[in-house]
Image (cartoon, helix red, strand yellow):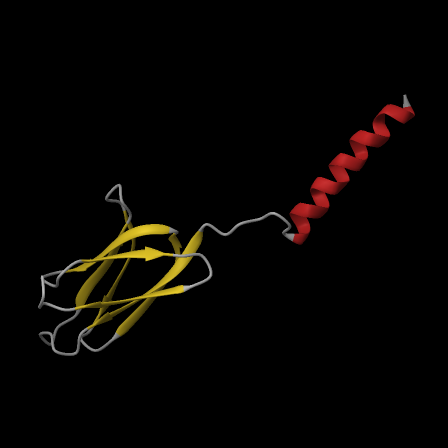
Length: 107
């Protein structure tokens, strides 16, 4: 009976070691940095990052000329929008910062 439990214990130990060391783990989130153009009206804008199903993944207020950084955004296509500014589509990649600038021109 002892011989049968040795392989099971080895597999369990290997799985635990991989989990603890991060082997095979993938981060499915990324970062996005959003700047509101300094040429916009002087009031705060509610910047929102939406995923394809329309759910708002992140939001924060920023003044014109300011930048807001979001971490933990799902990797893939997102839409960044704020009040009356033109929405921008972007793709978030793991391990990279995606930069987006919002403006009211060029919609």
